[in-house]
Length: 215
Image 1 (cartoon, one colour):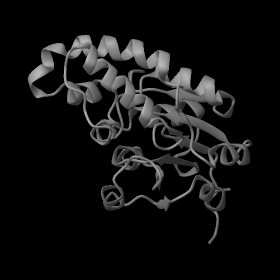
Image 2 (cartoon, rainbow, N blue to C red; image 1 turned 90 degrees about the vertical axis):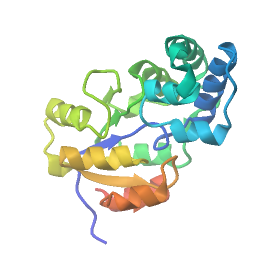
Image 3 (cartoon, rainbow, N blue to C red; image 1 turned 120 degrees about the horizontal axis):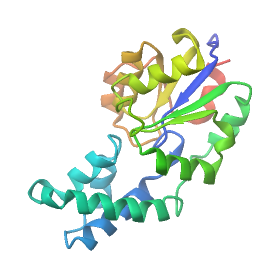
Image 4 (cartoon, helix red, strand yellow; image 1 turned 120 degrees about the vertical axis):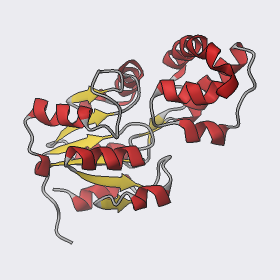
């Protein structure tokens, strides 16, 4: 298989670079307990991740408790900022892949708040990335193409020399909406069937496979 030349690798964060679902779920259930609301099963919380913290907490507090949303947001933010690196790590294979692409520009584009994103990247290895954009930087949330178009413009990279790597339909649709190719990953939190239906350009099972596809 011929390798595809790229100048820029854009990575989603949760479920793509990092295994973060345990810390997110812990902070969600801490928040619910603080507000006197029933905790939720971990698998249910994992399914809420991917659309940013506001959507996450709207779903977590539940239909009948939306009046508690602002309290939930405040409690969650405080707790998660303190605990977002308790169990969160790069997925196996991520660091060797990032080192392999040391000569390439690499960026993080996530629907996660930039505050949490910076704390996590600083803890795990921010030196790998030249830039990071979060869901509250004003460019919209994927699948809106805004943050991806902003990155391409800021770094002056042509669309055909960039690829987005992500684990959700938001990533695949966002990349396609921005006019760039997308590599979906099967090891994250995304639903495989839904991702496949969005027709990513590549679908990998391990981060190391990126080293075989791109040059």
